[in-house]
Length: 190
Image 1: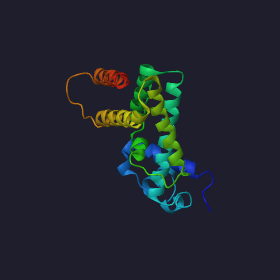
Image 2: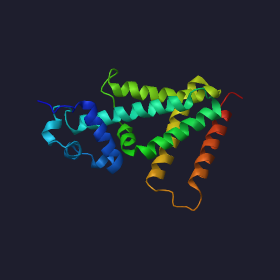
Image 3: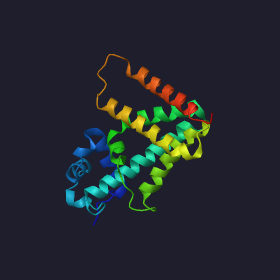
């Protein structure tokens, strides 16, 4: 019989918190069980193993990031939406590196997988950034990929302490966002 109060959402939340603290690579069923004060076999009543648990953490991370992006971008367009989205991604990844890592490369099992729905919401937010620019429809997917790639690269390097130069990282981040804004404005029809 499952332990009272222990449900899949509780297990997922504990795993996400642990991944944020120690890194996704260090996440294990036994570590989550210890965190929850139960024995490892107890968790198998709530999740189907480590792969399922990581998938659930990815869903939680994608939902949380999607919610944060939608809230930050509400009522914004153009450069304001871009800056809000960029700062939201940066803040989220710094606060939740394990959850974010779980989303990178995560593959939905199908169109009804909660991960597919959560990732679509996040991608919709990135696409919404483009509404303030005159990007031709056939180039929007390239613009979304560029935006995600640049933000991912910058924030991943930042969280890994990969910027060792004396220049202020916040200043570099602002420069990158201004550069993207200029590029998106220039990508419109001539």
